[in-house]
Length: 402
Image: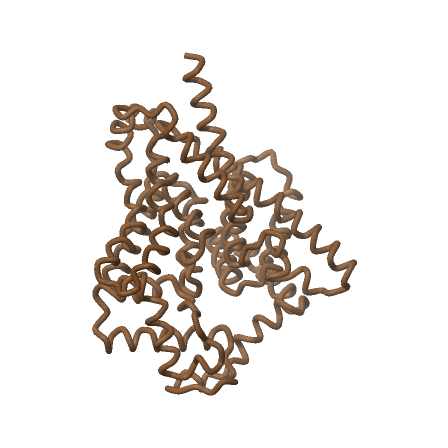
Protein backbone atom coordinates (compact mmCIF):
# COMPACT_ATOMS: atom_id res chain seq x y z
CA UNK A 1 0.00 0.00 0.00
CA UNK A 2 2.82 2.38 0.91
CA UNK A 3 4.62 1.61 -2.34
CA UNK A 4 1.43 2.23 -4.28
CA UNK A 5 0.99 5.61 -2.56
CA UNK A 6 4.59 6.58 -3.36
CA UNK A 7 4.01 5.64 -6.99
CA UNK A 8 0.90 7.84 -7.23
CA UNK A 9 2.80 10.73 -5.67
CA UNK A 10 5.63 10.22 -8.15
CA UNK A 11 3.12 10.41 -11.00
CA UNK A 12 1.67 13.62 -9.54
CA UNK A 13 5.14 15.16 -9.23
CA UNK A 14 6.05 14.18 -12.80
CA UNK A 15 3.01 15.88 -14.32
CA UNK A 16 3.61 19.01 -12.23
CA UNK A 17 7.29 19.11 -13.23
CA UNK A 18 6.31 18.76 -16.88
CA UNK A 19 3.86 21.65 -16.43
CA UNK A 20 6.54 23.85 -14.87
CA UNK A 21 9.06 23.00 -17.62
CA UNK A 22 6.86 23.86 -20.61
CA UNK A 23 8.29 27.35 -21.00
CA UNK A 24 11.90 26.28 -20.36
CA UNK A 25 14.46 25.65 -23.14
CA UNK A 26 13.67 22.56 -25.24
CA UNK A 27 16.41 20.31 -23.80
CA UNK A 28 15.22 20.90 -20.23
CA UNK A 29 11.57 20.45 -21.21
CA UNK A 30 12.41 17.20 -23.03
CA UNK A 31 14.00 15.77 -19.86
CA UNK A 32 10.75 16.30 -17.94
CA UNK A 33 8.67 14.95 -20.83
CA UNK A 34 10.73 11.73 -20.70
CA UNK A 35 10.41 11.61 -16.89
CA UNK A 36 6.61 12.03 -17.25
CA UNK A 37 6.47 9.20 -19.80
CA UNK A 38 8.61 6.86 -17.69
CA UNK A 39 6.50 7.36 -14.55
CA UNK A 40 3.39 6.49 -16.59
CA UNK A 41 4.75 3.01 -17.34
CA UNK A 42 6.29 2.16 -13.96
CA UNK A 43 4.12 -0.47 -12.28
CA UNK A 44 2.07 -0.57 -15.48
CA UNK A 45 -1.17 -2.54 -15.14
CA UNK A 46 -2.70 -3.50 -18.48
CA UNK A 47 -6.17 -4.13 -17.02
CA UNK A 48 -6.28 -0.73 -15.29
CA UNK A 49 -5.01 0.96 -18.44
CA UNK A 50 -7.76 -0.61 -20.55
CA UNK A 51 -10.32 0.68 -18.03
CA UNK A 52 -8.89 4.18 -18.30
CA UNK A 53 -8.75 3.86 -22.08
CA UNK A 54 -12.45 2.99 -22.31
CA UNK A 55 -13.26 6.10 -20.29
CA UNK A 56 -10.77 8.37 -22.04
CA UNK A 57 -10.67 7.18 -25.64
CA UNK A 58 -11.46 10.76 -26.74
CA UNK A 59 -7.96 11.77 -25.59
CA UNK A 60 -6.54 9.74 -28.48
CA UNK A 61 -8.01 12.17 -31.02
CA UNK A 62 -4.94 14.31 -30.32
CA UNK A 63 -2.78 11.47 -31.71
CA UNK A 64 -4.22 12.11 -35.19
CA UNK A 65 -1.50 14.76 -35.47
CA UNK A 66 1.07 11.94 -35.17
CA UNK A 67 -0.64 9.62 -37.65
CA UNK A 68 -0.97 12.25 -40.40
CA UNK A 69 2.79 12.52 -41.17
CA UNK A 70 3.16 8.75 -40.74
CA UNK A 71 0.42 8.01 -43.29
CA UNK A 72 1.85 10.62 -45.67
CA UNK A 73 5.03 8.51 -45.86
CA UNK A 74 3.08 6.29 -48.27
CA UNK A 75 3.25 8.91 -51.02
CA UNK A 76 6.29 11.13 -50.35
CA UNK A 77 9.55 11.17 -52.27
CA UNK A 78 11.78 12.54 -49.49
CA UNK A 79 11.37 9.62 -47.10
CA UNK A 80 14.13 10.80 -44.73
CA UNK A 81 12.62 14.24 -44.20
CA UNK A 82 9.27 12.56 -43.64
CA UNK A 83 10.68 10.52 -40.76
CA UNK A 84 12.01 13.72 -39.14
CA UNK A 85 8.42 15.04 -39.11
CA UNK A 86 7.22 11.78 -37.55
CA UNK A 87 9.88 12.04 -34.85
CA UNK A 88 8.95 15.68 -34.15
CA UNK A 89 5.24 14.79 -33.85
CA UNK A 90 5.82 11.72 -31.66
CA UNK A 91 4.64 13.75 -28.65
CA UNK A 92 1.11 13.64 -30.09
CA UNK A 93 1.16 9.87 -29.63
CA UNK A 94 3.04 9.32 -26.38
CA UNK A 95 1.70 12.23 -24.29
CA UNK A 96 -2.01 11.32 -24.77
CA UNK A 97 -1.19 7.66 -24.03
CA UNK A 98 0.63 8.70 -20.84
CA UNK A 99 -2.23 10.97 -19.76
CA UNK A 100 -4.69 8.07 -20.20
CA UNK A 101 -2.68 6.09 -17.61
CA UNK A 102 -3.91 8.54 -14.95
CA UNK A 103 -7.20 7.61 -13.28
CA UNK A 104 -7.62 11.11 -11.90
CA UNK A 105 -5.91 14.40 -12.82
CA UNK A 106 -6.24 17.57 -10.76
CA UNK A 107 -6.68 20.03 -13.64
CA UNK A 108 -7.02 23.05 -11.36
CA UNK A 109 -3.68 22.26 -9.73
CA UNK A 110 -1.95 21.87 -13.09
CA UNK A 111 -3.35 25.20 -14.29
CA UNK A 112 -2.31 26.86 -11.03
CA UNK A 113 1.31 25.67 -11.31
CA UNK A 114 1.46 26.62 -14.99
CA UNK A 115 0.14 30.14 -14.41
CA UNK A 116 2.40 30.81 -11.45
CA UNK A 117 5.47 29.54 -13.34
CA UNK A 118 4.75 31.80 -16.33
CA UNK A 119 4.09 34.80 -14.09
CA UNK A 120 7.36 34.28 -12.16
CA UNK A 121 9.33 33.74 -15.37
CA UNK A 122 7.85 36.91 -16.90
CA UNK A 123 9.08 38.86 -13.87
CA UNK A 124 12.54 37.31 -14.25
CA UNK A 125 12.59 38.21 -17.96
CA UNK A 126 11.73 41.82 -17.14
CA UNK A 127 14.45 41.91 -14.47
CA UNK A 128 16.99 40.47 -16.91
CA UNK A 129 15.95 43.01 -19.57
CA UNK A 130 16.36 45.82 -17.03
CA UNK A 131 19.90 44.66 -16.20
CA UNK A 132 20.74 44.41 -19.90
CA UNK A 133 19.35 47.89 -20.47
CA UNK A 134 21.60 49.36 -17.74
CA UNK A 135 24.60 47.64 -19.35
CA UNK A 136 23.88 48.47 -23.01
CA UNK A 137 21.42 51.41 -22.77
CA UNK A 138 19.52 49.69 -25.56
CA UNK A 139 15.73 49.99 -25.17
CA UNK A 140 15.28 47.00 -27.50
CA UNK A 141 16.25 44.70 -24.62
CA UNK A 142 12.68 45.04 -23.31
CA UNK A 143 10.94 43.99 -26.53
CA UNK A 144 10.06 41.04 -28.74
CA UNK A 145 13.00 38.67 -29.42
CA UNK A 146 15.31 40.37 -26.92
CA UNK A 147 12.74 40.09 -24.12
CA UNK A 148 12.46 36.28 -24.36
CA UNK A 149 16.05 35.58 -25.50
CA UNK A 150 17.09 33.89 -22.19
CA UNK A 151 14.46 31.20 -22.84
CA UNK A 152 15.53 30.62 -26.45
CA UNK A 153 11.85 30.72 -27.43
CA UNK A 154 10.00 32.70 -30.10
CA UNK A 155 7.82 35.55 -28.71
CA UNK A 156 4.68 34.06 -30.31
CA UNK A 157 4.98 30.95 -28.12
CA UNK A 158 5.71 32.90 -24.96
CA UNK A 159 2.77 35.16 -25.84
CA UNK A 160 0.48 32.12 -26.13
CA UNK A 161 1.68 30.80 -22.78
CA UNK A 162 1.33 34.19 -21.13
CA UNK A 163 -2.23 34.89 -22.31
CA UNK A 164 -3.30 31.40 -21.19
CA UNK A 165 -1.65 31.82 -17.78
CA UNK A 166 -3.07 35.35 -17.39
CA UNK A 167 -6.60 34.00 -17.95
CA UNK A 168 -6.01 31.38 -15.23
CA UNK A 169 -4.80 33.99 -12.72
CA UNK A 170 -7.61 36.35 -13.66
CA UNK A 171 -10.21 33.63 -12.97
CA UNK A 172 -8.58 32.98 -9.60
CA UNK A 173 -8.74 36.69 -8.74
CA UNK A 174 -12.31 37.05 -10.00
CA UNK A 175 -13.62 34.02 -8.10
CA UNK A 176 -12.27 35.24 -4.79
CA UNK A 177 -14.16 38.22 -3.37
CA UNK A 178 -11.39 38.67 -0.84
CA UNK A 179 -8.89 39.78 -3.47
CA UNK A 180 -8.11 43.49 -3.27
CA UNK A 181 -9.23 45.73 -6.11
CA UNK A 182 -5.69 47.10 -6.17
CA UNK A 183 -4.31 43.61 -6.74
CA UNK A 184 -6.68 43.13 -9.67
CA UNK A 185 -5.74 46.55 -11.06
CA UNK A 186 -2.02 45.78 -10.77
CA UNK A 187 -2.51 42.46 -12.51
CA UNK A 188 -4.50 44.07 -15.37
CA UNK A 189 -1.82 46.75 -15.83
CA UNK A 190 1.01 44.21 -15.66
CA UNK A 191 -0.66 41.91 -18.21
CA UNK A 192 -1.26 44.81 -20.58
CA UNK A 193 2.32 46.02 -20.27
CA UNK A 194 3.84 42.60 -20.90
CA UNK A 195 1.58 41.88 -23.92
CA UNK A 196 2.72 45.21 -25.40
CA UNK A 197 6.39 44.39 -24.68
CA UNK A 198 6.04 40.95 -26.31
CA UNK A 199 5.09 43.04 -29.38
CA UNK A 200 3.52 40.19 -31.32
CA UNK A 201 0.70 41.72 -33.36
CA UNK A 202 -1.46 38.59 -33.29
CA UNK A 203 -1.00 38.22 -29.50
CA UNK A 204 -1.93 41.90 -29.07
CA UNK A 205 -5.02 41.39 -31.25
CA UNK A 206 -5.96 38.28 -29.24
CA UNK A 207 -5.59 40.19 -25.98
CA UNK A 208 -7.87 42.98 -27.22
CA UNK A 209 -10.53 40.45 -28.27
CA UNK A 210 -10.31 38.70 -24.89
CA UNK A 211 -10.68 42.04 -23.08
CA UNK A 212 -13.99 42.75 -24.80
CA UNK A 213 -15.21 39.20 -24.19
CA UNK A 214 -14.22 39.30 -20.52
CA UNK A 215 -15.66 42.78 -19.90
CA UNK A 216 -18.73 42.56 -22.15
CA UNK A 217 -20.90 43.62 -19.19
CA UNK A 218 -18.39 46.22 -17.94
CA UNK A 219 -17.53 48.13 -21.07
CA UNK A 220 -15.90 51.02 -19.21
CA UNK A 221 -13.15 48.66 -18.02
CA UNK A 222 -12.66 47.35 -21.55
CA UNK A 223 -12.37 50.85 -22.99
CA UNK A 224 -10.01 51.91 -20.17
CA UNK A 225 -7.69 49.00 -20.99
CA UNK A 226 -7.98 49.80 -24.70
CA UNK A 227 -6.85 53.39 -24.02
CA UNK A 228 -3.94 52.02 -21.97
CA UNK A 229 -2.93 49.62 -24.78
CA UNK A 230 -3.12 52.46 -27.33
CA UNK A 231 -0.96 54.73 -25.15
CA UNK A 232 1.62 52.01 -24.54
CA UNK A 233 1.76 51.11 -28.23
CA UNK A 234 2.13 54.79 -29.16
CA UNK A 235 4.79 55.61 -26.57
CA UNK A 236 6.91 52.45 -26.73
CA UNK A 237 9.07 52.70 -29.89
CA UNK A 238 9.51 49.03 -30.86
CA UNK A 239 5.82 48.18 -30.54
CA UNK A 240 4.91 51.35 -32.44
CA UNK A 241 7.28 50.43 -35.27
CA UNK A 242 5.85 46.91 -35.53
CA UNK A 243 2.30 48.25 -35.75
CA UNK A 244 3.26 50.97 -38.24
CA UNK A 245 4.93 48.26 -40.31
CA UNK A 246 1.44 46.86 -41.01
CA UNK A 247 -0.18 50.25 -41.58
CA UNK A 248 2.51 51.36 -44.05
CA UNK A 249 2.46 48.13 -46.08
CA UNK A 250 2.87 48.39 -49.86
CA UNK A 251 -0.20 46.42 -50.98
CA UNK A 252 0.81 46.51 -54.64
CA UNK A 253 3.18 43.55 -54.07
CA UNK A 254 0.14 41.29 -53.72
CA UNK A 255 -0.65 41.78 -57.42
CA UNK A 256 2.78 40.68 -58.62
CA UNK A 257 3.66 37.27 -60.03
CA UNK A 258 7.46 37.67 -59.98
CA UNK A 259 9.48 39.52 -57.39
CA UNK A 260 12.69 41.53 -57.11
CA UNK A 261 15.41 40.73 -54.58
CA UNK A 262 14.62 43.95 -52.64
CA UNK A 263 10.83 43.73 -52.69
CA UNK A 264 9.36 45.97 -49.91
CA UNK A 265 7.61 43.20 -48.00
CA UNK A 266 6.26 43.73 -44.51
CA UNK A 267 5.42 40.86 -42.19
CA UNK A 268 1.78 41.02 -43.30
CA UNK A 269 2.29 41.38 -47.06
CA UNK A 270 4.89 38.58 -47.06
CA UNK A 271 2.42 36.26 -45.35
CA UNK A 272 -0.42 37.20 -47.71
CA UNK A 273 1.88 36.60 -50.68
CA UNK A 274 2.96 33.20 -49.33
CA UNK A 275 -0.63 32.12 -48.70
CA UNK A 276 -1.82 33.31 -52.11
CA UNK A 277 0.96 31.54 -54.03
CA UNK A 278 0.74 28.38 -51.89
CA UNK A 279 -3.01 27.99 -52.41
CA UNK A 280 -2.76 28.76 -56.15
CA UNK A 281 -0.07 26.14 -56.75
CA UNK A 282 -1.82 23.49 -54.65
CA UNK A 283 -4.99 23.92 -56.72
CA UNK A 284 -3.09 24.03 -60.02
CA UNK A 285 -1.18 20.84 -59.15
CA UNK A 286 -4.31 19.00 -57.92
CA UNK A 287 -2.68 18.39 -54.53
CA UNK A 288 -5.65 19.70 -52.59
CA UNK A 289 -7.04 16.37 -51.29
CA UNK A 290 -4.08 14.63 -49.59
CA UNK A 291 -1.36 17.26 -50.04
CA UNK A 292 2.32 16.77 -50.80
CA UNK A 293 3.04 14.76 -47.64
CA UNK A 294 5.05 16.08 -44.70
CA UNK A 295 8.37 14.89 -46.16
CA UNK A 296 7.99 16.74 -49.49
CA UNK A 297 6.38 19.95 -48.18
CA UNK A 298 9.62 21.93 -47.76
CA UNK A 299 10.84 21.11 -51.28
CA UNK A 300 7.41 21.94 -52.70
CA UNK A 301 7.29 25.33 -50.93
CA UNK A 302 10.84 26.13 -52.09
CA UNK A 303 9.84 25.31 -55.67
CA UNK A 304 7.03 27.87 -55.36
CA UNK A 305 9.49 30.50 -54.09
CA UNK A 306 11.93 29.70 -56.90
CA UNK A 307 9.19 29.87 -59.54
CA UNK A 308 8.25 33.39 -58.45
CA UNK A 309 11.85 34.54 -57.84
CA UNK A 310 11.31 34.94 -54.10
CA UNK A 311 14.55 33.03 -53.55
CA UNK A 312 16.39 36.07 -54.92
CA UNK A 313 15.37 37.93 -51.75
CA UNK A 314 16.56 35.09 -49.54
CA UNK A 315 13.14 33.49 -49.07
CA UNK A 316 14.26 29.87 -49.05
CA UNK A 317 13.18 27.28 -46.47
CA UNK A 318 10.59 29.73 -45.14
CA UNK A 319 7.48 28.02 -43.80
CA UNK A 320 4.03 29.30 -44.83
CA UNK A 321 3.56 31.30 -41.60
CA UNK A 322 0.15 29.75 -41.09
CA UNK A 323 -0.80 26.51 -39.37
CA UNK A 324 -3.79 26.04 -41.66
CA UNK A 325 -1.95 26.70 -44.95
CA UNK A 326 0.90 24.47 -43.76
CA UNK A 327 -1.55 21.64 -43.07
CA UNK A 328 -3.25 22.18 -46.42
CA UNK A 329 0.07 21.84 -48.27
CA UNK A 330 1.24 18.82 -46.25
CA UNK A 331 -2.02 16.89 -45.95
CA UNK A 332 -4.52 18.64 -48.20
CA UNK A 333 -8.10 19.36 -47.24
CA UNK A 334 -8.16 15.99 -45.43
CA UNK A 335 -5.51 17.20 -42.99
CA UNK A 336 -7.25 20.55 -42.42
CA UNK A 337 -10.51 18.72 -41.63
CA UNK A 338 -8.65 16.50 -39.12
CA UNK A 339 -7.17 19.59 -37.46
CA UNK A 340 -10.59 21.27 -37.27
CA UNK A 341 -12.09 18.08 -35.79
CA UNK A 342 -9.47 18.12 -33.02
CA UNK A 343 -10.24 21.77 -32.22
CA UNK A 344 -13.97 20.96 -32.31
CA UNK A 345 -13.50 18.13 -29.77
CA UNK A 346 -11.56 20.48 -27.49
CA UNK A 347 -14.32 23.11 -27.76
CA UNK A 348 -16.99 20.50 -26.94
CA UNK A 349 -14.97 19.40 -23.89
CA UNK A 350 -14.65 23.00 -22.66
CA UNK A 351 -18.37 23.61 -23.19
CA UNK A 352 -19.19 20.58 -21.04
CA UNK A 353 -16.79 21.49 -18.26
CA UNK A 354 -17.36 25.29 -18.32
CA UNK A 355 -13.69 26.12 -17.82
CA UNK A 356 -12.98 29.66 -19.03
CA UNK A 357 -9.18 29.29 -19.05
CA UNK A 358 -9.33 26.38 -21.48
CA UNK A 359 -11.50 28.52 -23.77
CA UNK A 360 -8.59 30.96 -23.85
CA UNK A 361 -6.13 28.10 -24.53
CA UNK A 362 -8.10 26.98 -27.61
CA UNK A 363 -8.86 30.52 -28.80
CA UNK A 364 -5.23 31.67 -28.55
CA UNK A 365 -3.90 28.56 -30.28
CA UNK A 366 -6.39 28.78 -33.14
CA UNK A 367 -5.85 32.54 -33.53
CA UNK A 368 -2.04 32.44 -33.58
CA UNK A 369 -2.29 29.56 -36.06
CA UNK A 370 -3.63 32.01 -38.64
CA UNK A 371 -0.33 33.89 -38.93
CA UNK A 372 2.18 31.38 -37.52
CA UNK A 373 2.85 27.67 -38.03
CA UNK A 374 2.41 26.99 -34.31
CA UNK A 375 2.90 23.23 -34.76
CA UNK A 376 6.18 23.72 -36.60
CA UNK A 377 8.27 23.75 -33.41
CA UNK A 378 8.50 21.69 -30.22
CA UNK A 379 7.04 24.48 -28.06
CA UNK A 380 3.74 24.46 -29.92
CA UNK A 381 3.60 20.67 -30.25
CA UNK A 382 4.11 19.95 -26.53
CA UNK A 383 1.74 22.79 -25.57
CA UNK A 384 -1.15 21.38 -27.62
CA UNK A 385 -0.39 17.70 -26.94
CA UNK A 386 -0.21 18.21 -23.17
CA UNK A 387 -3.04 20.64 -22.47
CA UNK A 388 -5.25 19.15 -25.19
CA UNK A 389 -4.90 15.71 -23.55
CA UNK A 390 -5.45 17.14 -20.06
CA UNK A 391 -8.62 18.92 -21.22
CA UNK A 392 -10.08 15.80 -22.86
CA UNK A 393 -9.23 13.55 -19.89
CA UNK A 394 -12.19 12.42 -17.78
CA UNK A 395 -11.46 11.65 -14.14
CA UNK A 396 -12.50 8.19 -12.87
CA UNK A 397 -14.09 9.63 -9.72
CA UNK A 398 -16.19 12.08 -11.71
CA UNK A 399 -17.28 9.37 -14.15
CA UNK A 400 -18.30 7.05 -11.29
CA UNK A 401 -20.25 9.86 -9.64
CA UNK A 402 -22.15 10.47 -12.88
